[in-house]
Image 1 (cartoon, helix red, strand yellow):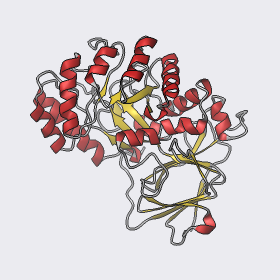
Image 2 (cartoon, one colour; image 1 turned 90 degrees about the horizontal axis):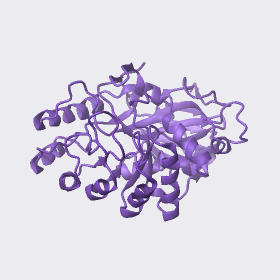
Image 3 (cartoon, one colour; image 1 turned 180 degrees about the horizontal axis):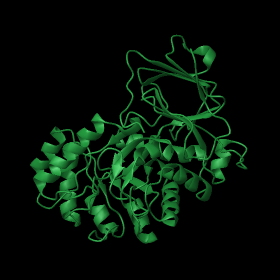
Image 4 (cartoon, one colour; image 1 turned 60 degrees about the vertical axis):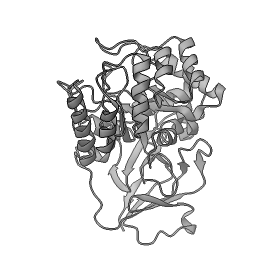
Length: 398
């Protein structure tokens, strides 16, 4: 298990050739024309036909063998603690396992499982800064974990948010997991966070663990966080009329999670589509949690929403990549020039009844992952967690 990210030494050039299908991650054009992607020094520099691109001087060549290349998946809702260990299920290697499920970026919704988590203002600020630094200094398996998401408490003042932002903290943990559970206080603090460039999310629905509480539509709408965290519950969802009210009453992100209510997830998807607001829908797992760790959680969400929500698979993948990248202001999640060279290379699972990878996902099957790449560096090859792919890419000796 790689705890540290392998670093490129010197200039690097990645060429992925003979791609069968390129999924862009962008709702407006989910499928790109081309069979080759070139990346230099960790950034995408060209997408198109092999014969038209400059592929000379490659330091890494990946022969895709007709497989599908998509942006690395983004998990918009995780609860990390320290390195690749979680006390929630006392599990080591959970982030690396998610990498084998195609996840190359994770967003913390609060390091709430930290044993002895401090709730005083000095302590919670210190923990947030520690988590932000620790996960950026050491990336488990190379996965980009955006951590350091303090859970707000009633004693906080505006200066605390200014101090956190100056120290590099860019996220708030789920509003409602700490002492702040009322709309007016939440709205005031979310406003302070926004003023200093800190993005916010909120716990939506019934309590997740003893001691947490119900956060209903009134609190969600008044708090006005940037993202409506697990709108389908984590675990317990709000009634349909409240979910509809939230979707229609704000223009914020609508986050659907694996560890929530699946029927409510499909209901949220339907409302967002009816409103023409599919760009607001993003995906997370809410792991680790009582439901455990789900290495294939994001893939399972893509497949579930596509097959049961009647959503074209290429669009479903956008909810797990480009939508989240744009909402979270990340430089990955889309296959376009200038973005980070973070990719998952997949093919339809062996013996899936679907004739193509997209058809197989729309039938409810998971694709097989053959490789993940982060910042232009190959991190994993054939996944130990997905079903075996029909075809797999391979690194070519230069």
